[in-house]
Amino acid sequence: MSVDFVQPARRVAYEVIAAVRETDAYANLLLPTKIKRAALNTADAALATELTYGTLRMQGYYDRVIALAAGRSVDAIDPAILDVLRLGSHQLLSTRVATHAAVNESVSLAKQVGSRSATGFTNGVLRTISRSSVDEWRERVLEATTSDDDTLAALYSHPVWVVRALRQSLLAENRADELTALLAADNQAARVNMVALPGLTDPSLAASLGEADPFSPTGFVLAGGDPFTLMKQHEGRIRVQDEGSQIAALALTRARPVRADERWLDLCAGPGGKAALLAAEALAGGAYLVANEVVPTRAELVRNALAPVPLDVPVWEIDGTRIADRHADTFDRILLDAPCTGLGALRRRPEARWRKQPKDVAELSGLQSNLLDAALKALAPGGILAYVTCSPHIAETRGIVATALKAWGDRVRQLDTAAVVQSLAVTELDLAGDPTSVQLWPHRHNTDAMFITLIERNA
Ligand SMILES: C[S@@+](CC[C@H](N)C(=O)[O-])C[C@H]1O[C@@H](n2cnc3c(N)ncnc32)[C@H](O)[C@@H]1O
Image (cartoon, rainbow, N blue to C red; front, side, top):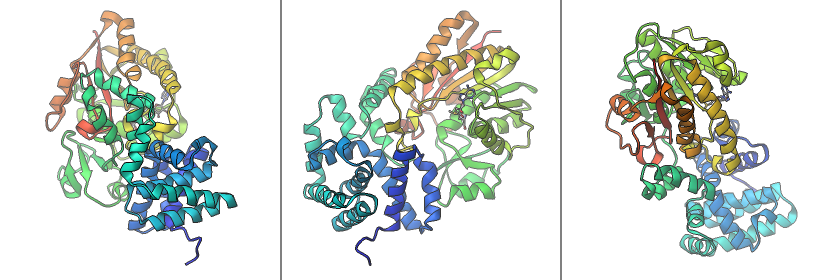
């Protein structure tokens, strides 16, 4: 074996981590392609996934260790070599990979991607890290933190502003004591959860492929196998979908019995996961559904997602903030699954916490408010709107709703969303706070942190 050998799983992990940094690639989309191209076997694919996701998630923590071991700020390290060091640190501090394999292969990788001097530097830093225990490094990192929030940020590898935002959201439910459980849950791999479109799949299918979800009546946890192969085999009538997303869509469709010929709208539908579930529900209840998505490539994904449902669903491509220009007072139910920071899906998107910035919240909240106002105008009198985000950030959730309620006054009212969600759930959920909205959580419900509120426009 050449001294410069880098195991294919490590090479794949490195390439994905580097692409995330260089081209803003999404690890969850790029990794499967790279694994396929490298023809990794199942064990190597699992190793590449663990190395990629683990390194990206814990990057903030590893950077603190690397800075201490290197005696310089990570900003002063060549970015390609920093990626090698992060991947090496992950192997040394969080896996059972043998020290010599972690160090030697990192040095070989450094030789391939960095300058000549980088190999000695990589060797030195990783050997320094390997000489102290995991606990000793934790102590050293914590000694260098500057506040309680910084300590949590370091230990659980989240940006400080995200730690604060998550605490605020839990505080709104009087559950701030759950913060560390939430931060820890963000660092756990999410299970593969699927939806079996109701009315289009045999009810026994879920049991044969996995275990029924505890809360969503349409979902199951996949026991094993490749979900995308299964999806193809079942012609899209089962698909990957978080349990929280299913609950959000069903909160709208099951808020009250469906009258025949109701008109439904999915205002921000791409890529179409919830649209497919809404379509199955519309078909069963005799309702019409329109899906809308402003980005044409994502509108195409919506059409694909809807294909398995034998219902004619037009897919519009208009700016949702203008929906009421031509469709005021029209729809009986509207799903507004708003574009958001995605801070509720950090388990699933390992790099997202480092990519998002507080300014994203400010930008998105303007759009969210405009979309909500337009959607309320497009609602028929007596109609119901579900405002949903996969972020628990107060500025994207309760803040947006409060602004709309103030502007709309007695022309709208919030429904008992908690009661609706409990009534459709298979088993009772531990929900906290004001029942006009529901906040799901990874640590409490094992779902993404979806926020759901139902608003009725007065007749
Ligand atoms: C959170 S995603 C929706 C996810 C989707 N409901 C699903 O379950 O697959 C929000 C979507 O809104 C779209 N979007 C952003 N701005 C929009 C606008 N002004 N009008 C309509 N759609 C918009 C984004 O392109 C994105 O696809």
